[in-house]
Image (cartoon, rainbow, N blue to C red; front, side):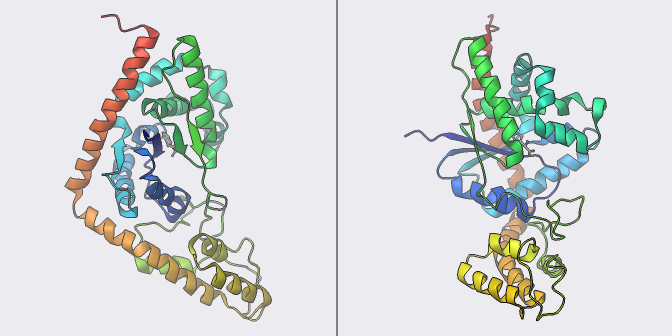
Amino acid sequence: MEKENLLTGDRPTGKLHIGHYMGSLKKRVELQDQYNNFIMIADQQALTDNARDPKKIQNSLIEVMLDYLSVGIDPMKSNIFVQSQIPELNELTMHYLNLVSIARLKRNPTVKNEMKEKNFGDSVPTGFFIYPVSQAADITAFKASVVPVGEDQIPMIEQTNEIVKTFNYVYNQNVLNRAQALLPKKGLGRLPGIDGKSKMSKSLDNAIYLSDSSDIIQKKIMSMYTDPNHIRVEDPGQIEDNTVFTYLDAFCSDKHTLSKMKEHYKTGGLGDVKVKKYLNEIIQSELEPIRNRREYYQNNLDYVYKILKDGSNKARSTASQTLFDVRKAIGINYF
Ligand code: TRP
């Protein structure tokens, strides 16, 4: 049976952290054999709100690529490519824009949120405002039927499917395919920052990066937010909203030991330092091989760029086939 196409993408705006790893990268590595995989580094989408700082995107592009390779994304199994190298996506975006109203774009809750966070108001860059349409171009260009994303990206998939439906209806052809979001398992969607804040992010300086050295990782783990009322070892402690235990839930595969530790912590007598040391061991052993692979690729950057170039060329030929069909459906293939 023909494998279905799967597309994932990340905006390169910084290095990837263990939240990305648990929430999506690990799953992506697992899915490599099941699907025909496209992995897009969405540098053009990243530029929509970083147009005046292209260096940041250039630098992040290679960091993200190194992160991909180091977690085990295999270029023999997954086609990794760079969004800006596929001009066909831009033409698709233009055709789709004609089918989407400003009112509809204004309703996209994720964009609405981001606009509020960034205080854009009416001075929002147009490219940013319409990025859901360009994302619809990404998804449809590669005929992706499965798109693994986080909760916040569901509105993008919905908007993509609306465009698919409208396009096929208006031009009376079945050129574009519907896509389905594949969501992370409950609890793995979002790892909090080491300060216990809801989100791991660069600006909050609360993330553990895949590229962090083992010393830095240890320091970060030892400084983690726990139960502020768990002052003496013998005090009973709280597991809920205790970041160390949230991380253990995500990383520790020995559920038996973990549940015994939780009981011990709740009744009192188990100190934070012990729990943190246990977490540190687990995270270090998960990240060490990743860091080693990263070093290998870091020393072979020509090879890494070559993978991206070949991947982009391949992706381009798929996208140009879709664009050909789209132009034909609209009827602008005059000669
Ligand atoms: N919007 C995604 C993000 O914020 C990145 C992205 C761009 C994407 N195009 C995509 C994700 C297509 C999945 C499919 O990171």
